[in-house]
Length: 102
Image (tube, rainbow, N blue to C red):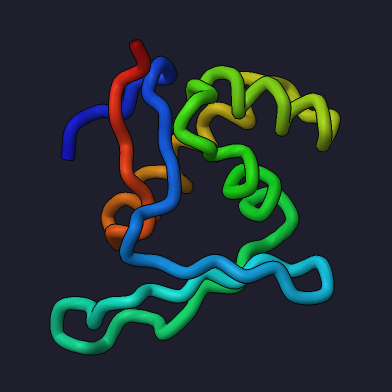
């Protein structure tokens, strides 16, 4: 997998459905994973929820990191590392689409 750039923008894949239920975000893939053993749905924790809701295809990952770091009062560099790990995992599972901004 290529290294993710903080100038990239992301948005949920067209192959997922996202629902917010009682303040929790649930992401449901609309496809079967390889080998059929992937999760049927993903319930996002507070940080992942905040990140997911900001991935609108317009904000760069750097902008998302700054917003979420401010929201959770954590250092931006620490949040950036968590963000990149989350994006890498979600793109690996085909739940997010990534492209370079501009």
